[in-house]
Length: 132
Image (cartoon, rainbow, N blue to C red; front, side):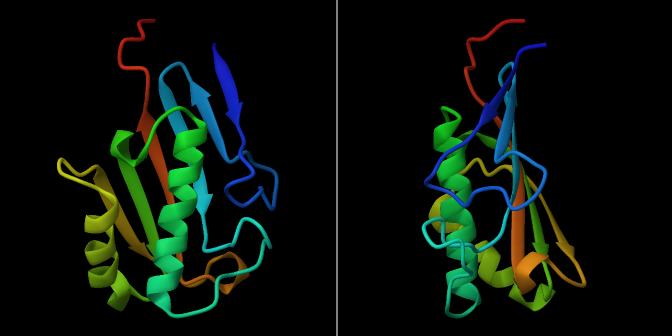
């Protein structure tokens, strides 16, 4: 199996036993991102909009490090500690993604690492010409 570990300094470093992303052939599995500032490894200050934007920015950096971009994401998972923020996720997602949008799930959870209000992970396809 062709497996490549993806790492970039432009996104938060892993704070546990995982990689920022793993590429297997032309599929990239992006690990969950919380609203950490990649330079300071501290949570962003501000409201939920700031948290959601930081998460999208972190995902964008990892996607680019893997040779793709947000438009290559085929599945996005969103975890929120308060589902009342779901409309804000939709609003901001429309700024970061263009149609056709990826498949998506949004899940309410009791808690997230570092008391984040949002976490997202994704699956991305790159190298469309690749054949097995």
